[in-house]
Image (cartoon, rainbow, N blue to C red):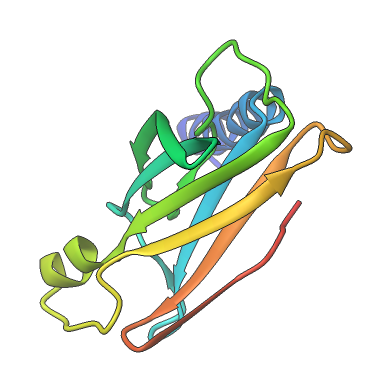
Length: 137
């Protein structure tokens, strides 16, 4: 292996490790995978909100990267309080951009953070006419 190829491989590994370390400090990450082709879904807009009584307050938003991930969706430097949160994936925009139709223009995922874990991960497995989600790690 040439020196420049070794440097490139080391750089890629370091980037991956730093992304993992950054995500470990943020209490919320998401990941979107397209079940139709088995590939990540880059460019999906995601909104995070917290429930206050009957209302929802926007906390942050982001767009999935080339791996279909947002490694740090919670506002930087803040701790996630116990409560009910909603992560809304803007899937209709993503499908339209990829010239595909969908039955679900958005996928809201409502979850209760109870404070028993330092990090919550919400994966979304997506297809044009269905989706699945679960509490990841």
